[in-house]
Length: 93
Image 1 (spheres, rainbow, N blue to C red):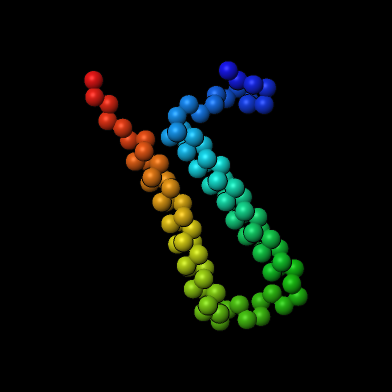
Image 2: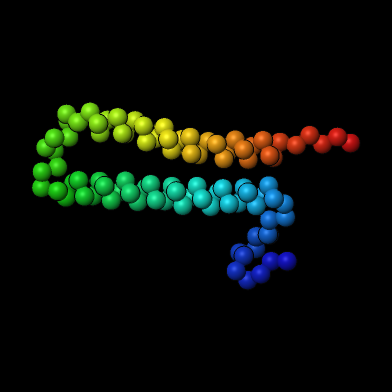
């Protein structure tokens, strides 16, 4: 039965659906964190007095901007694949 604070949505009835709900909540929080961090970094860089000095020749910055999205994708992929295989059921009648 739905309560007032549930917006008409039902509770999770199975462990797989609970895992799906928790996965969605954690990924959304992570995406909010990443987007706010990127916006904050852009604002700080653009408001800095010397924002274009030394940015063009930084190899370590390029390496980190390549490695961090790769690690982020791994962090997203592993629980998603686990959830995919948990929801894949074979129903035999």
